[in-house]
Image (tube, rainbow, N blue to C red; front, side, top):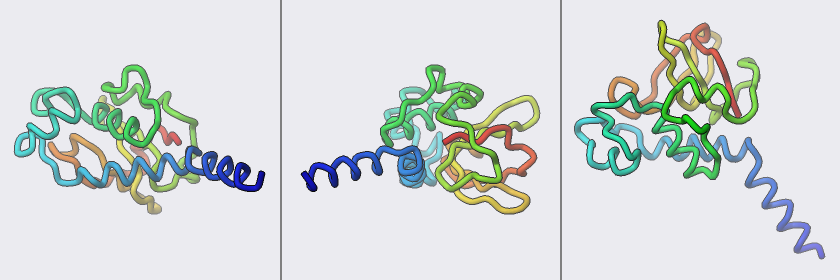
Length: 147
């Protein structure tokens, strides 16, 4: 009976949104540095699209979410669709691994929070200067945090 209770508790802990968020960050970090042209074959195989011709931040996030055991939004290839992913979190409660949606002009971008300071959000994501990398966004650009 104690073993069953322990296994149940372990399963719940491993499938909680907090654990899954950390899993998404770890998954994304495995792809750091891959460029849409230099590593096109590998990214094309992983994403199912040609990243050199298609905006791919949402596609990257969809792949990462699935690898972490999460369910991406139905239109995951569109960055704005991530506004409906998981549960909403206030920016002040954001933690590494949370999904961040930012607005840059009239466009949206989605990635995974790596770190948060008083003025910036450090985000790892795809299609950031044509590659998977860490980029800094102003906290004012953040339109949603999802866990």
